Image (cartoon, rainbow, N blue to C red; front, side, top):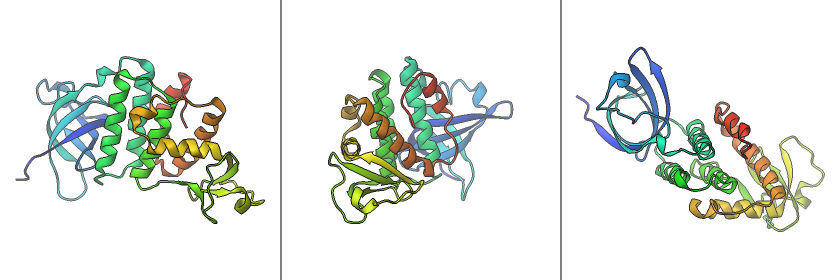
Length: 256
């Protein structure tokens, strides 16, 4: 018999399966993203009580299966309920961050830094402000931990600094920056013109702890440009449209 294992986890997505069961996708600290079946979860008052709501932080106990397929979820211990997000804006931000992690990460590919990043961001949103710099910092650090970190600080051709207050070009296809001289008169759909000061701000956010990024302030014009840059950098790695974006847009919040 396969032995049970346990990990700290964040519930990402839940869907019904039959009359009583649920299919649950969750991000763990040691085994990556997994999908499991929770038998009779809809009627369970002991094994999964308040634990299978998206955004809940839990300790999940499950039995893995050899090869691809669903793990068998035995029970969960609640660490942080999803009901802590009582503010609509913070809830919308939390849903966006969790869905973004879900669509970018591979199944059963352990990246402990991704779990720590999402867990920290969700904890900050329990009581802290839902700020645009927090989103940008999270997106940049998510790309880095997922192996898609863009090169924005130097020109991809001549290695010149691109973070000065001068025009630069972002090559979205290659996730890199070009100085104005190297970009020349090239006009391609994957090239996006921006200011070096915007790249400098993004570079700072990529290195800042999320708690500090949450309290930063963006110049409106700089943030509009940063938003477009992150939209282009994230797009190639999204396996499906993000449903949470509709909620953010309805609330008038900043998101790619």
